[in-house]
Length: 180
Image 1 (tube, rainbow, N blue to C red):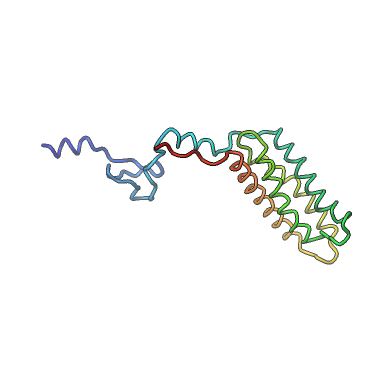
Image 2: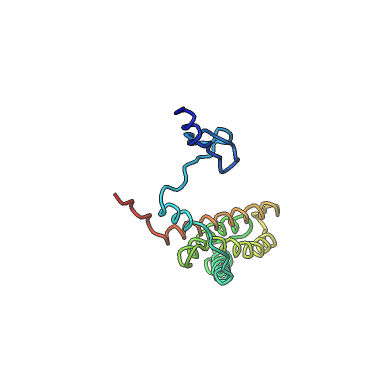
């Protein structure tokens, strides 16, 4: 009789990912391997919610567009005009653009309020298109096919995302120490 009441009280645990019925004592789904361990406290839930993007800010996208445009124009176009020993044409210009966009994303991520790490990426897409056009049209010695410019521009966009995310993490500061 005791086993009948024990089996009636222990309901099978439904997997939140696939819906498979698992034993009540299971910590992972037998079917898909998803963990049943959710956030352990309200602080964990708040921290998980805090790391996500809240919305899209057109204002910060415009600010990021201005910052990335100025940085790219200054370092890829302006610096070789001032220092004649530098020549950022073709592939060298794209190799300089990638860290410039990373630093621009890092800067925007650090100064923008809230979670804004998508805005610099969108701005970088708008900056990368004319940069690719400018560098591809002016190549003489260090030539690359157009698809390589596009791939390197997409790598730069990816590094902008990494930079803006790191900027947001720097802005948040160190995680709070758990109370003991």
